[in-house]
Image 1: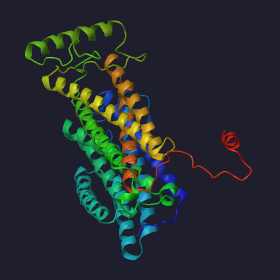
Image 2: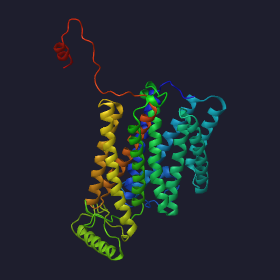
Image 3: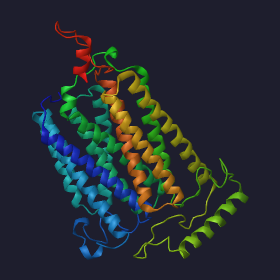
Image 4: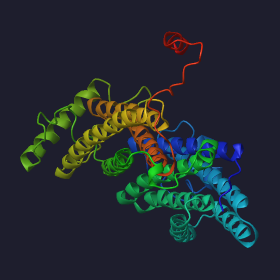
Length: 425
């Protein structure tokens, strides 16, 4: 049974884990944006050292190595904090053999951090995948059992860590795509676990039936917009892990067209134009930073292909659809539930993040894909998905009546309507 007793410290630790995960996604985004994912070419070791024992002078202040190694260290911190949360939740919600079995499994998996053998870590990831499937089945059967939510996120963080390592050793972009997408799913699952451990969640009333829920149109808007954002993030992760630079660098049109041609002749022209632009930017000192390291990644040495153009334009179309759905959700919630309703506030935050995300996407194109702006674009996308998941979950589980206007009190015997109006003002 899920514990109804609130723990401020467990909630704070879960929030800390979410913040660390945001930082981890940002650091991973920076690694990809700067094309330095292979700066540390071995795993689970780093230049032959235990990851935690790599000398400072071999990674601090060294372009590429610093980003990649910092990403690994932050991933380890997220894994450790998630393990503590998982053990804490199991201690609170279970007794006897199941509690001790869970704590033993966590201890064994943590001890694997010292392993230097890929095969053992891959085997552990396979076991974590089985645990993930088992946890999903338990959650479907009993969504209120937070110990299974905790097991879910801990299984995911193990799989995510191994995928990140295999991306380095196997040199496959497809693994990078899965790694990037799973990071977003992990953030959502961890964020929901934090929400379920919040005081607000435990004090709010759960819906007993469909009549307790907000109108269906609002639930649908939150759900479908969130699904669309997730699909958009998959497209974005696929684009980034092609490591092909920027195939289109004008906006709102693309190569002067609303949908650019992708025939062989056009692609040859695009590649020639990009090469000339790259040379001009380099001559103007806009490609490298003050330390001589690359900061703009218009071109990475790969030629523009037809699928690059198609994926880029699909990403733009999806962005318009996401903006339209989130805007519609915001208008509907404020109209049907009132401005003060929690879902109206979530929707307004969602709309603000969507506009920021759109601006960052435009700047990424117009500024020729600078690493810092591209990374902020990734972070904003993660925030969009998390806020959407919150809205979709709350709208489908909590009994939250509309707040359309202030309640009208009956007039006191000695009050006139004008006096009552003045008191409200």
